[in-house]
Amino acid sequence: MPGLSKPEIQGCRDLLGLLDNDDIMALCDTITNRLVQPEDRQDAIRAILAYSQSVEELLRRKKVHRDVIFKYLASQEVIVPPATEKHGLIQHAKDYWEKQLHLKLRETPEPVKTSEDIRFFQQEKLDFRRLGEEFCRWFFALLNSQNPFLGPPQSEWGPQHFWHDVRLRFYYKTSEQNMTNFQGAEIVSLRLLSLVKEEYLFLSPNLDSHGLKCTSSAHGLVMVGVAGTVHRGDTCLGIFEQIFGLIRCPFVENTWKIKFVNLRIIGETSVAPGTLGKPSITFEPSDLEAFHNAVTFLRTSEGQRNVRQALGSAPGGDPDM
Image (cartoon, rainbow, N blue to C red; front, side, top):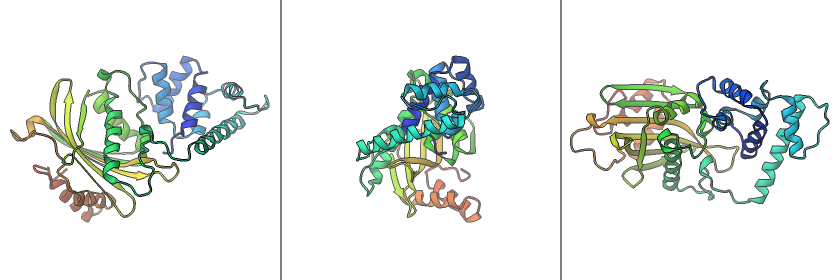
């Protein structure tokens, strides 16, 4: 899912500001398939921008009327003939935002680090440990900020942070145990979001040398393993271990997206007494590489064995995870 560039996001936000509330809410329902229930107008606009796959897909919606696009272009001093049809106005808007992007890139020859786009490094040779730490700080701050008990979200959560075919393997062991798989940027982002927005969880990562481990494959996949504790309000509910697979986006400089996620949550009642100390990641870099191989060959018997070997290396790990 390519998502929108920064000039496109800002431009579409300004353009959507010209729509009335009924059209905004209807547009949000259409784009999110009614899976997102916005609290207000601004929340709806954030959802529209997060779940739109492209500028053209958004602007071609029936609720985005031709005269709204024309008024927006006029406000930006983009002069077009009044009789221009809607598809022509969309192209003018796309050209304008692309021009803004090129101007911004010329003004900032060195990449600007922004947590929103997971832009961390300006050097060619990556420090994977630093990449993993910066990614975890960004990811968990963004995810936890969606918890309604913590106030308004600090930034936009959505499928734009994932590759379109991202996979999530989610295992939990509390009073019961279960393992489920999800595929696709929209469903994966919604499932992770529900942990904090609907179940009110707070994931606290341990980013010291025991709680964070990183490695990379020869093909450019960066794997980040992190451990931490799970909270709800003032109660510590248990621990978690999570593996991320990150791939650099070739179209946007110094931007990474999530390719796969493996999440284990173990309730405190399922942890051996006296072992719930400082959370530490039990995966070694070689295990992360084995996990990558297992994802690659997931449908083969050899791949299934690699998954069990990598995930079974954790003390008390479930062989069926």
